[in-house]
Amino acid sequence: MIDARRFRALFAILLLGTDTFMLALAFGLAHRLRVLIPWPRQAADIERLLDYLPVVLIFVVSNVFVFFLLRLYHLARATSRVDEFYTAFVGVTVGTLLAVAAASLTLKNSVFEVNLPRAMMAYAWLAGAALVIIGRWLQHQVRNILQSRGYVQDRVVVVGAGDAARLVIQKIQSSPYLGYRLLGVVNGTGGPSQLHGYAVLGCTEDLPRLIETHAIDEVILAVPEADDAEMVRLIALAHRDRVSIKVFPDLFEIMAAGVTIDDLGGLPLLSIRDVALRGWKLSFKRAMDIVLSAISLALLSPILLLVAILIKLDSPGPAFFVQERMGLDSKPFRMFKFRSMRQDAEAGGPGWTVKDDPRRTRVGAFIRRFSIDEFPNLINVLFGDMSLVGPRPEQPAFVEQFRQLVPRYMDRHHEKSGITGWAQVNGLRGDTSIYERTKYDLWYIENWSVWLDIKILIRTTFRFLFDRSAY
Image (cartoon, one colour):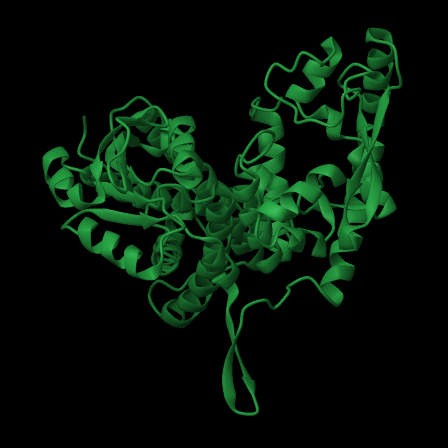
């Protein structure tokens, strides 16, 4: 097994080398494109590629410098690829502008003075962004393969015994590419010999000894119910040289993620809930819903027709399943889906869908696996009952149960329900903890932005293409 810290340092160096190579390659490609494409005029003013070596050097150094400022060589374990690639695109954009300015200032009236066509620099910008993103994606694939196969792993323990600890353990189990080797669980007072399928190594007081004995690299504190004093005590017990400590947040910490300072006649106040979705933002989100849902329905119409026919041929009953759900301001609406179960599936009352649900039809099992049953939700989006992105709507019967059990559960209904959402793209769908799903939904509501919606839609597309965990 390779030492994890040396591995990350080596990969950071390799990432720097990959970026340097890709940026230099992008400039060479830009030079070639400018020669081949006579725009905005013939390329008679283009010099040999070797004459542009000073510009290439400035271009590469400027971009790498901006990448360092944007912390793109800080290898976070589970950063969103969408966020990283967006940041890389922004970095190449700023780096290219910086390179143009630096080349104009330093090379003008010097022995290295060369003509710097604007079209060529535009090609260098676009090619640089594309090649850097491709290079980083390939690096990530290699890194994930090595970590998934156990060549590079951090030894980790989870502190906690409740739902939060179970959720963390499930995420580690389902994500071997993260490079974690879970040694066991640390419970508050010891307790049973096993929790969530892993050995209980001891109680929290044993943390210092366990860290030394097992050479632990990371401690994850999954005790959101702990008060401040207890959390400080746990952090102090886990604090050792070279040991990383991560804390699973509680509901208030998620609420306070966007805390702002307000005042009351000069008296400072913390504004906890400054709702992001209002005014022009609501109008923009609605416009995006209308445009994207209309385009999607038009493009998917042949598939929708085919699925409807297959459902009718496979089992008796309608092709569509219409069910009452609770949406914006707790108002009920009729949600459309493709029928994936027998017509009498809810004869005994509403119930959760479970893995290998015996109520599914043959076609239903297929369309649920690929989430095709949710395509008709686009009709709800076009009608305005739902949004493309938002908290997943529940049946009124379940809402009445959850509002009694989960703090701030009804705050989910301050925004439109969505086909997909922050909880879904983070693996919280189906028969998962409603408490944890509510946390993610509230975080989305408090931190909404256009880019967050776009990121969720991109991640949903990738999950649709590659994830087969739906049931």
